[in-house]
Structures are given as C-alpha cells and as structure tokens.
Length: 256
Image (tube, rainbow, N blue to C red; front, top):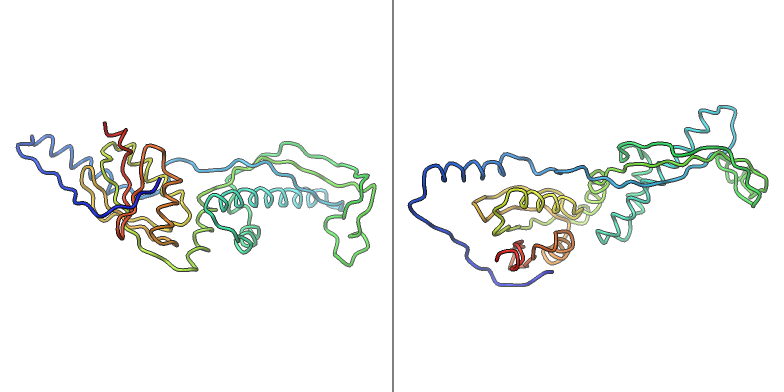
C-alpha cells in the first residue's frame, strides 16, 4: 500500500553507550556498505516449452533447430510474464532481441521428451520458405518434436526490460528505508527492489542504524515507482510517497 505524507524528521541520540556496543554497530553498518547491491538468491523462472523441426538429412541439425525453437519459446513466455508484472505492454522489440540469442537468458535446460510425430491435421512444414509449396498446410506430415524444461534467468530478462524502459528517460529517486534494524530483513528488502525492472541501479547515500538512504536510477517517476515498490515488497512493509522521496518502513503491527 502506498501512502502520501509530508516529510518528517528522524533523529536518534543517546549517551553512555558502551564501547563494545559502538564497535558492534560500526561493524553492522559496514556490513551493509561494503556489500554490492546484487541479487541475494538465484532468481529464475522454470518454463516448459516445445520445439518442432521438419525432416532433413542431418539428424543432428533437426534436433538443434527443435531445441533452439523450444528455448525461444521458454524465453518468450518468461519475458511476457515478467513484463506483465512490471506493467510493460509493448515488448515486441525486447522479444526480438532476446530471441536472437535465447541462451543468453537460459541458465540451463533439460530434455523431457523427444520424438517424431505424424500429423494427420493440416499443418505448415517448418523450415520451408513462404514461397515453397511445402509451406502450404499438409496432412500426414512427420515432424520432430522436443519438450524441454528451461531455467530462465530473470535478472537477465529484467536487465533487458530495464534497458528498453530507460530509453524513455531516467529519474533519480531517493529511497529512505526506516526502522529496519535486522540485517536479514534489510537484505530481503534490497533483494525485492532489485527485482523491479523499472530500477536500473541502486546506490547508497548514507546508512545509520534504523535509517538507510539510497538513490535509485529508475525509468519512472516517484508516484509510479512507489506503486511498483508497494507491489513487490512483502506485506510487512508500507511504502510512503513523501515529497521527492519514497520511504519504506515496517508496517505498524511489526513495530509493536
């Protein structure tokens, strides 16, 4: 959920803190600053896809073509799902670029099944030129089919979507993360931000215990980006649009 609010000050002070506690807090802060803002866990989409190829003298070439088409199908499906999540309608150009090198987006794949199938229904013959008579749908056509399960790299797809979106302009947006003192919670929150294709890059401005200020290079303004962040972060956080900044903090129930 996104809230709109005025800017509020945030300050903490204290005296008489033990030296050991100071030392631990410094180590805790440095652990954030020295870590690059990268994905913390493998981010993939597992897709099942089918590829088809027509007969040829070289059996290895037939299988290669079928696998290539299956990989392209897997990438197209994963890209479409990610674009839908990001609210990006036109991905035709991105799809064309991705399909020119599908293995750039596939971490690995395995063949589930393969074999020749005779099609009794009218069907165009793959690998035929449009002006070739074989391109006309025929019956009794024997085609090679292969079914695969592919692990598609969402980070690579997100980068492609982000690059395309950046062509429309780049915005620098301040992200303030408040009251998140648990390292694992902070790390999970950063990982959520990284999954947003509208965000091209995240850098740290400052960090204090309970307050982190970041700058996001994004392809959308504050309002749109705040809505997108609210969809991505867990229910345990609220996203507040405050002036020229976006504030993310734990939901009130989690502060009790």
